Structures are given as structure tokens and as C-alpha cells.
Length: 610
Image (cartoon, one colour):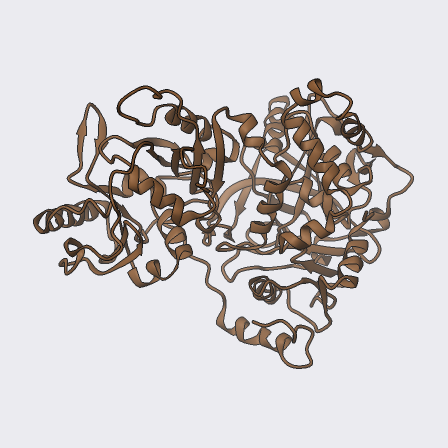
């Protein structure tokens, strides 16, 4: 397998998976815009050979398709998959120790190794300003590292086997950062590096951090893998690379010998600076907030180093393919972690974190006359309290009565739920709780609400396949459009305040009541542009679930409270843009026009159909 990133680039090109861009390209917006066009066209990886203002090359879209990712890891894929499966279900090793002997041996042979005499990454000591300063979206606060491997060690138990390797975004320039001396680190305190920082703060000393960029692609993937307990990122990196992770210590900092670049530095207790804005994976900008500051110690680059990057934005993007790759590697890990779960799908079109679809077991009511969600509710609580799944705002869950049900078939799955849900009983809110830091629909940073829609039992209704008469010609609520069976979009006036929104909802409720009940339409979406929302499934999923806070933006026709439980006849989700929401990502028209030169006849990307 690949010993470094250069070998991967050469192999991809040789097998038709990579194209070189020889023309000079500006890292300010152009490189990102080109990447987005090529990704959208399902195109190859890109090697930028002539980056304006930098002597270093850059590569993107390495993991742009699942096919290409599996090609990169073709020689080590099965071994890595087997080790992860074994760690997820160690009982299997006890039942069949001989059959799993080779798997355990593979893991032991992947342990990291100290190779202090071979440090190609330290060939050149450079400055942050020498690195390609890639500015992704027009309103970004500066240049960012988007594929970093951020390394830290437990201050109380130092050493590589007590380390954390994570992918946390790094701001290289802009804002108040002193160029070449400071960079910004965006992460939450509950993440691996955050735990290390809290310990260092308690001990009253700085946390040493190393940022590895590039190296074998396996190292990049290891930084984002949700690994089972007891399997370190460094061991997994070696396992997937087919070669042990080579490291050294320089000036007390851990160095990945095979990385293309390494940035070392310290995070001191209590030191923060404003970080952001940054165009993020929800399709909006994450705004400026204080985050930890890293004082730069040294920056290294190997000879002929390549700077890898990706671009995030409204999904699907390259991180979507990352997610598919991780899902294939981890397999049924979630089943082992949460008993009773059969399937959980973080819906990519909705930005992954806002929306979950799940299938679980329902064994609590096998002999009762009325089937209703019971075990599903306990499973839902476990889902919403587990790792990254805890960032979800909306969870739709049902039981596995229909074996053909698939959470990845979004319309079929939602149809199944909406046909069975009892809106007087099966809607459960979690208020004043945590949500994703990048989600600005809540009441503050990391603060918002969640809602659970649980459905189980026989079909209760036929869903409308045309716009019900009760939703036509409603004063103040125009442009009724069918999104999918049982779901209709209505266009409202521009959102002003929540007090006004409540008055508008009261008016809508009365108008629908006057026209007659609509049991065939359990879900109504109030939006800014009903044509946009109903134009595609992805538009519906994205706009609805990234522009609403369940506790504040869910209303109901004939809604009521009984014993502190809320119910209604029809759900109304107010998915209009609110004044406190983050702005959406909009490409720069001048840049979009300018990059067409790369796709013209005779240019490097002429064969890419955009």
C-alpha cells in the first residue's frame, strides 16, 4: 500500500482516477469552486500543480466517490473491516478464537512504531504563509485546513497509545490571528482533544498539539473514524495503510514521519480568539465564536509535499462519500452499541446531524390489542444520547414489521411513518437541550430542542397524493404544493418574530378548521418558497430540517395539551428562514464565470462535463 500521499496520487492517475490541473489557480475561491464543480459531475481527484502564491501542490476530491475510496484501500479493506467487526463484537472471538486469530494478529502488526532516524516530513522548516491559503467560500473568515489530523496526548498518561487523532477544522489566517504565529482550533470540549485540554487546564499547563496534513490516505480516514473502544486511531491508521504508523518526537511534539506537512504548537489555558465564519456542511456559514488558540511552534514540510483539502457545503459533498465509506467499514456497530436498534440513518440531504431515520424492535406489546410505540421510545432515548447521534433534532423511528423497509429510501420510509403515526400520542419533545454547534436554528450556541416521531402498528390513513381542498386558496398562505404523499408545502409571508408567527399559525389553524379536516395530510411545511421546497426531495429535506427548531417551529392543527403531553391533528413545521439563522452558502458569480477557462477545449478539465 501507499507509504505516502505522492504514491497514492501516482496510482490514481495511472488508473484514471485523477487529473492534473497545470494552469495557475487562485487559492482564493477558485480552487474550491473547481472542486465543487468536479465533485458535482462525479469527476476524478484533482492535482493542482500551480497554486498561486505557493510553491506547494494541492490535491482534492481524493475520497469523492465510494468507488475511488475503496480503490485506494483495496489491498487492506477486508483486514480493516474484520478488525473493526471483531472489536464491535468481541464475543465472536471467544466463540471462534482460531477463526479470528489472523484478525487479531493483523491488529497487533499495525501498532505504531517510533522511527526517529527517518523523518522525511522534517526536510524543510517553513511558515504558515508558505502553505496554500485556500479560502473556500466568499464570507469565510480566512484560509482553513479542511483535512487535518489533529494529534494530542492525555496530559495525565502521555504516550502515543493514549493519544487522540481527530479532524477538527483549523483556521490559518484572518480575524485576529497573527500570521505564522497563531492558528485557530474549532472543537467542542466533549471531543477527544477537548478532554485532553480540560485535563491540561486543570494541571495549569499548555497542551501540546501536532497537526498532520497529508501522508497515506489511511491516516486521514483514521482521524474521522468512530472506532470501537480499545482500538486507537494510530493502530487503525496502520492497519488500513498496510504499514505501521511511523512517528517520532521533535522538541517534545509527536511527528507523523510520513505526513506531507506538520504544524506543532501549544494551546494555553483560557486563551481564545474569534474563529470563523466558515462555510459548513449544513449548507450555511458557521459564525464567529471564540475558540481555542494554538501558538505555533514550528511548521514542517517534506520535499515535494502535497497539500490535501476538501470543500464542505450543502450536501452532498465529498464528506458524504466519507460517510458512506465509514458506514461500510463499521458495518453494524450501532446494533452492538444500542440493543434493539436495527438501523439508523443520518440523512445526508438534511446535513446529517439534524435528521435521523431509525428502525428498532418493539417487543413490549406482542399480546396487547392496541399496538403502540413502547420499546421504541427507550431505544430512541438511547439513540439521542449516543455520540454524534445526540446532535440530531428530528428522529423518526418505527419497528421492523415490514422487512423491506429501508431508512435510506427516504420517501418510502417517511410514507410508512406518516401512514401509522398517531399525532395525539406519538410526538415527543425534548426542550432546552443540546444540538449541533453548527446549527443556528436553536436558542443559542449548542442549545435547542429535539422531537421524536414514533410510529408502530397498523396503517391508520391513506395519504393524499394531491393537494387537499382544505389547503387551497388560504388567505396569507399561498402556493400549496405536494412534496410527497401526505406532505404539503405552503408559502407564508416573511418571518418577523415568534409572536407574529404564533398569530399566523392561529390564523392558519382556523382557516383549515373552517374548510374541513384533512387526515390524509399529516404534515404541512410552511416555507419561504414552496416551489423550491417541492422541486426535489433533497430541497425538502434540507430546507425543512435545517431551518427549524422543533420546540419553537412545530405547531399543530387543533393542537392541545393533556397531562403535559402535546398532540394535534396535523403537524405544521415552520421552515421559514428566521432572522437569527446563519446565512446560506452562495458561490461568487465572478469566480464561477472565471473558472470556466479550466473546462474549455484544450484546458486541463475539458473532459469534465459540467
